[in-house]
Length: 179
Image (cartoon, rainbow, N blue to C red; front, side):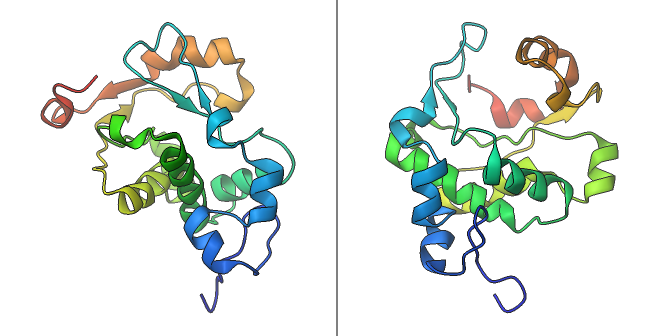
């Protein structure tokens, strides 16, 4: 707190620190940028038949885009707790937690892990596991890096996902019986 006080990741305010710690951002930014739970839970496309929902917390633009990019590319890994707070709040409000079996962060390439020093999805998943009591496992590896996801069209990201990831050899025990 002394060196990195809890600040809203979108506006930087140090007011409402307890709320930011709990919910991920200040109430003003939540009202401006985040989808309420009823709009954040999206229907899954037909190819994702084993998933129950996708969550889109916000439009990717303005202060939200800036905070995500700062988190991913500028070593501000403490923002993982803020983003986990936002996901946690939406999962609570949407009543999706009972349907969640396991938290699995999407792996990044070894090169990106060396460059960043952390997997941003892993940081969010670990914090979300602490907040929710759910188990987090890392049963996936990234087989190939491919093009940056942000440079691809949505259809290209979807169609190439199966080729980019594989299960680690010991993953069978941890994910067996889970869809």
